[in-house]
Length: 500
Ligand code: TNX
Image (tube, rainbow, N blue to C red; front, side, top):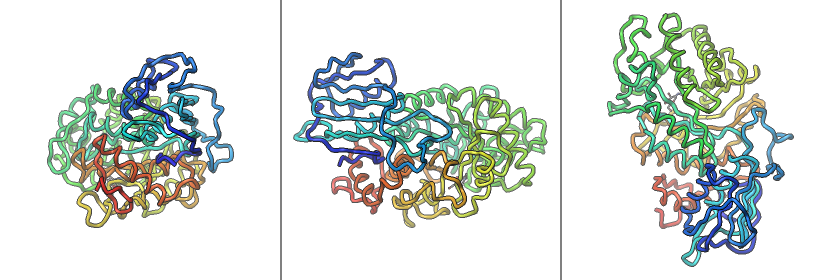
């Protein structure tokens, strides 16, 4: 069977091969739509050199047809929910892809579904007798969870639009659909806010270790969000509040009880900074920042942090999170909070993100019991800033060592004792960047683990197994090398000798 990651719901091998060296007619419903452009790019990457884009299918051989049809596809195999439906009703991503020697047909009920079909098509391509082609196969597929994400911390070390676009490409290839951007922390403020230019001006050029930092202009951010949307990836921006705020306290003196700016912070401690809702400057600051981030963001969600505050009373903390969540709702978005924020009274539609795998999930359970949705980011499984092994040069180890086995071998529905699986929207990996400074290091932390996590989030629990995904990961090394995506040669994967 072809090495598709995440493993599809159903894959039936057929006889033969669709030759990509022939003249190919790419039949699309709308030649100007992003999926048509993505299809052209994917075909170019897999070696199709003669591609004509048309909108009418004349039935002749050599066609690759993308169709937006009614959702008459097979329900996903092995989905635990009896009705197969998740309450938040995100865009349907199910698709079918039939590769036969004469033609290829991708069908979905939404553009997102067609993009997922294209990711599968790209992975099916291989080279035989010196020529490129697609193994004949019929695939029907649908995701287990609607939220399949990666958080990237661009505050501890800054990464700009070119690297983040590459990350979006990686997400799209593995059918991940959320890019959560951690835009502010103690060490740096990474999004220029028009009404508060001092934030990026004073706190945009600092980072862990004293490096140059950097920040996204509003234009950069919109460019990235648009690029992601065209690939079926939603950007969820995070302004971390009320803690992890030294960059704001450094840039805006009035946010401090003393009225004096704090010093730049380039270390890696956590928990020492917090905003104070009692100060007159605080709520206007929240309204300006959250309002502007919401206005720049087409997606439904705005993350307000809420993690690791060690200097506030529980009451002051809850009041702060409730105020920030209220402002997010007024700005037309659904608030997302880290685990601890589940202690606050959150508005309808809020999402709580579990991360602390070594402590009680009480705050998550309480929030879920009041109707919040849950995204799972358990550190010991999906914190991709953890070291692969004890001697690994990059990364931290507080949540454990995380190699392919740890990131892959768990069941999200069964992970949290007492949590109704119906409350779970999905799974999100996290890449904190205290120790990650370059594009190469960033990709090395992501691969191969992120591809494994993508399968946890997309594929049915009973359709996947560690030894099997390890073999498929090995097959993908060539793809990563073509794209210049560095990876860690984990000894849990049977790499072909050429990649060693
Ligand atoms: C905990 S996880 C944090 C981050 C650190 C990370 C390092 C979470 C919500 N907060 O501030 O960067 O650990 O692994």
